[in-house]
Length: 175
Image (tube, rainbow, N blue to C red; front, side, top):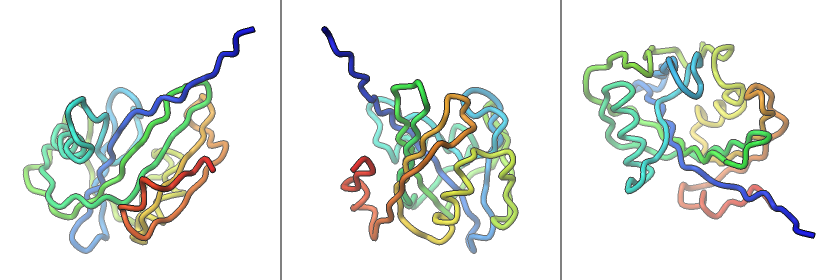
């Protein structure tokens, strides 16, 4: 008898949240096509071959908003596991208050500034209200969300906080 074992595949993604200088407003983009269409989110996407994760974050922000970021600050890693899909999305979360360029709507994203106290959670990913408080409190964290195949229903999550970004790689949420 041959035992078939499902192997988890990890794919690297980025997510950048642009905040104003006093961190009372956040720039979100309404996804116009592809995965996450119709949802407000930060800017980001797949890390391409040959790029570092930070290079991917900078490129995606530029492609989706026309903004160039300086001083990206890593805040955490968010893992997503969807029922029936062997791929785990490893989303590396960054923030910045230092951007230049003319903000524009692109074929992928419609940007809009929101007060951090009044975010459109009904049109965002259902995990956002769980981890956003940690993000806005300045915590460094890693969290793994488990979703049903409908992409709407969270069946559980595990998280841990870190005292520095360098600790993130050593955190094991599966133990």
